[in-house]
Image (tube, rainbow over all chains, first blue to last red; front, side, top):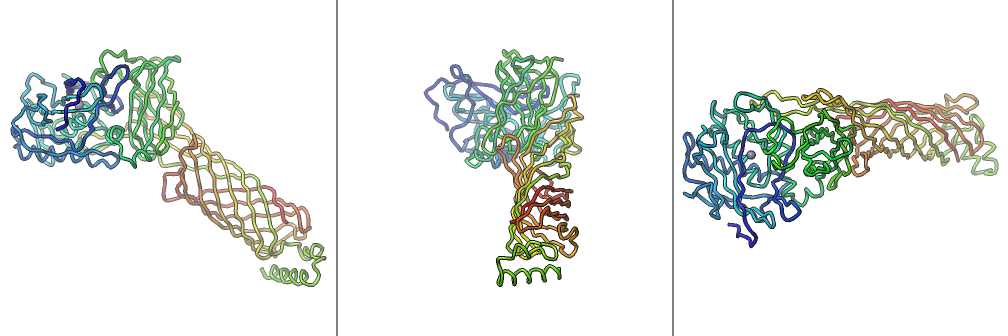
Length: 333
Length: 230
Ligand SMILES: [Zn+2]
């Protein structure tokens, strides 16, 4: 296991809850003094255990197979360097900070809208993830069928999402939903890290999308990637002032990749990294149909009062570099 | 062709036996350039614009079947004008080879429309820096010359490399260009050193560079300017 560093540790719980769409990937971060550092693993492979407790329709061997496959999907991203190792089965809980990273089922009927959740033990002086546990809520019906099963959530899809959190990714906002009684239904999404799952029976989220790959690549780039991938940074402004909490999505007109970012400070600045080189068009939108705290700190004074718009310049991402100083001017609704 | 060859032989003979009269004799029968003559030129260039493959920004649906359209794009490179320079040498009085460079700054436009959340339709643009470095072989039809040999039709074929720098000049993409043109040179003098007008029209077939369509495309092209013979 990763040794516990000298710095103070803190437990962070990240839930998959029902929120609304936007367009972005987001790295998880922790405040260290006056700066925010990204959460990330510093030592690989990530060693994890799985519980020996199954769930209706899923025995422990099937669970092991699905979790291994989901880890492999992330580890196979060519532009990044991550690896993982299954240590074995355990009877430990997937929800406790015990020095082991554990994935397993847990009965949480109280979390009636939470399919699964990831929690961390982190070193808050460095942002290093020391331990991470994932539980899948047995209050829901699960499926490991290759083709999916009507009325059951696909375990591999949800595991892929939660392991993305385990690796340090926050929620992406590349998706569209509609309001339905009791919450929201996903119409479409283009990120495994979108916070709302597709309806039961769907297996569409077993694959990573460009936004997921860009996010992972941003955190764990391999040496070649540093020379080939690039970034776009700039500001979103309204009447000359920065806009906080805006979503900026970059669309690569060559590859059709959609990758996004947020403005994360009062000056409206944003950076979208891990982008393939080439021409991009930019689209900015407010987070006006979302539970803002699903993406950003609830204390942030997110500006929702502006219209969706496109940038009127093609923004070119160079190989291994960045295009800076892009200013997206928005107008009030 | 036959006439050109005869003139070449004549010129060489005169050079051998009486070099001091070459300049006076070279334009007998039309004053065509001889083998070894050097031609330098430059001027303007015009190339037709073209549409670029324009993907729609799409999301995945739960079924994995039909995609969900977020917004549409419609991209093109507008027709552009630029400049060219070239240097050539005559191998015979009718055949020359040239190397040259063309430069232009075409505008790439991407129309963004059909947004699912009704974003206002917008045209996003960038200015490319477009270079073509190429070589050509020219065949001059001296037998079809007119105006006392001053006007000479020719055809040119060649190819080379396209280099296009996106705005910001940090991303360069390369491709290939092959051209075929037909044109006319009109010499304003008849001396061994002279200036002339040159115009040609034809097509350029380009593949790659800032164009995402790997199958290539054929575009009309026109060139015109001054040319100098030495
Ligand atoms: Zn989540």
